[in-house]
Image (tube, rainbow, N blue to C red; front, side):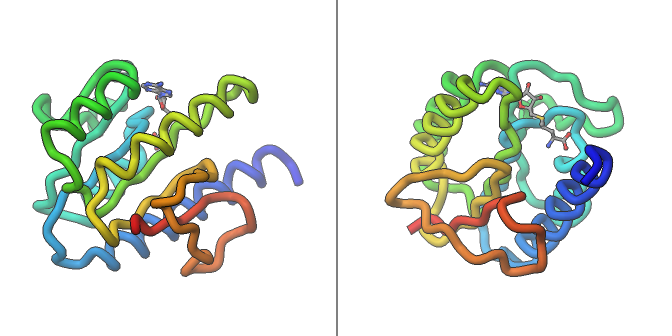
Length: 162
Ligand SMILES: C[S@@+](CC[C@H](N)C(=O)[O-])C[C@H]1O[C@@H](n2cnc3c(N)ncnc32)[C@H](O)[C@@H]1O
């Protein structure tokens, strides 16, 4: 498979799962967290699918397309390892959907980051919350689900917060 094919499959998996998750949370009250704003593509998708929902985005710096920058009070800039625990202190267990798209290119650094992000997610999420991630989390409070929509295997992961 070419890198282009692989990239397209990743984006298709993202979109299918974001659509499924947005429909699944329905009108359940709670926050949506975008962990890894990046260019803002998936943030933009979520805000279109979830009009009126409080969506908070996290990233080291704002490099989003100008059309996809969250309002200043919904954009938390800095290292996840500072901003996510602080957010969890202020808004514990209030997220009904967390989308984490924060994999790193360096495999060794990625292993450490994934472990640390996985450890921070449960404090952010309400019981029953949906967590979508480009990385596989290993945490006793995050229950890995079979993909609810057809996506290529091991491309994206779905968890439910216990
Ligand atoms: C793959 S991009 C996200 C792409 C985004 N979902 C989109 O559709 O445009 C991952 C983002 O995570 C951010 N990131 C990775 N590790 C981070 C960390 N430890 N703290 C803060 N941001 C981090 C990077 O700056 C990058 O913008």
